[in-house]
Amino acid sequence: MRIMYVEDNPANVFLIRRVAKEGNHEVFSFIDGVEALEKFEEVNPDLVLMDIQLSGELNGLEVVRRLRAAGHEVPIIAVTAYAMVGDKERCLEAGCTDYVAKPLPVAQLVEMFRQYTRKHLETQELLRLQAEQAAAAQSQGRTPAASQDDTPKAIVEVEDTPKAIVEAKEKGADVTVHENGTSSS
Image (cartoon, rainbow, N blue to C red):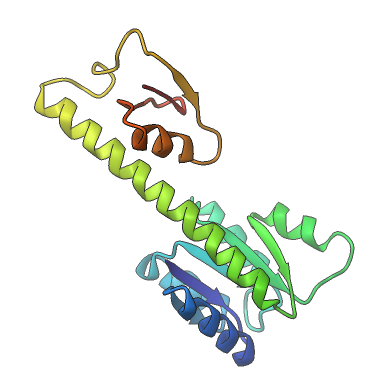
């Protein structure tokens, strides 16, 4: 997984790099928000860790707001020494996916990386299945919408994760992914 870490404290960057290395993750670190925004497309991260108290022109919340305004949906975790009532809500309102307070607990970082790696892999598998389905439909001269079975055997509701689709596919189901977030098998 590619992790962008925007942090101006070298000790925290060192810790994240060390923990990420154990999970075979790649870390791209930036010390200010302007540089992070400029390099975002190039890095193309799967996960962003954002220090909220950045020194420089932009604080972390402003960087998050700009990333969301540009349409980026990558998970962004607020990393902050702020531990006051309402700080977590402020981070979430700015567009952060989650919140981790400093000092960074290693066990929590390991679990967080594991969780987001799993989500990343599930998303990649869903994209692969959709591409296969589209290619098969196109090779048969059909559009993906026209290739849907009119009488599906089962409907699987997919909320935030494509895990149900992946599990159904692993059980041998013929899975069709629909635009509305459901799949038929």
